[in-house]
Length: 200
Image 1 (cartoon, helix red, strand yellow):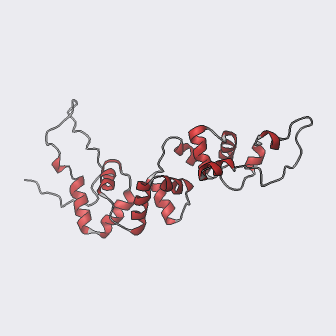
Image 2 (spheres, rainbow, N blue to C red; image 1 turned 90 degrees about the vertical axis):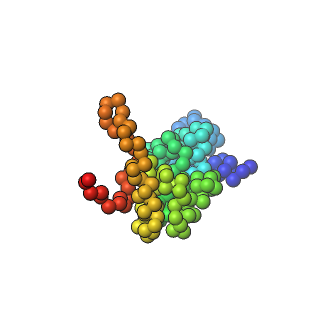
Image 3 (spheres, rainbow, N blue to C red; image 1 turned 120 degrees about the vertical axis):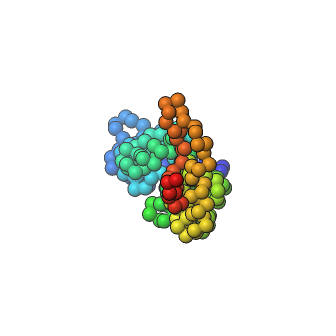
């Protein structure tokens, strides 16, 4: 049995507490049916392991207990809702995780599952220059903003290259759309724009 399978198979939210009352008369005890009572999950003191969350997202396993815990913890519910839409944690969550502000089991789990993502985290932790694919992603989507702008603040050469990459000067001068408006460049405002040109 793999580590992930063991973690999910060993997950029993109610196993660490005793039931305050017995089951209704004539009912089969929950322990023998595998049913997890909602009231037991509501008294859990910690969210489920992320392996269990992944199993829920991918297969629907542990649905009752996951949904019940999400009902009691708005933060967990928000993280779960985000995970249901995307597989990789947002980079701003990585930034918070690295600062120690918000420990994030999703970040840890994905870093273990994706060597490329783990490499980015190690580069960020060490204060290294962002790879150019990260810079490109920043220019077009704004992602990795903290990493890119922090490094630009430390390196003037990097800041100048960043500003040149973000400059619209290399775009066609006459490329209006059907309404006569210039097309969107799809880029963020340069971090350190060059000196303003004087009018001819």
